Length: 60
Image (cartoon, rainbow, N blue to C red; front, side, top):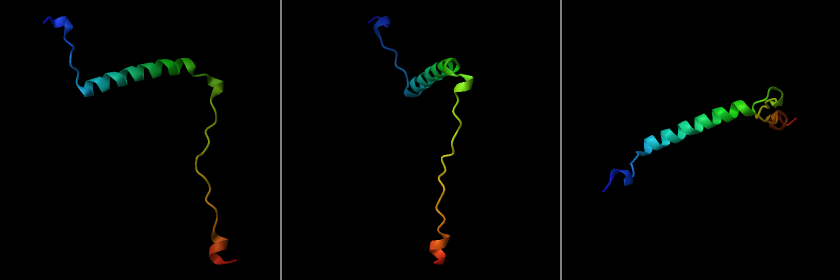
């Protein structure tokens, strides 16, 4: 058997690391191209106000 036809075995950890590196490079390169100064939306708080139950508790 020739060495060229053999498939090189890669550990799962190495494969995941390699995939993560590719993802990071892709996201960093696309992020710099798509960012525009005036297009950022203002951030909204995701906290919802809880109702004030004091009247119901006190019976007034």
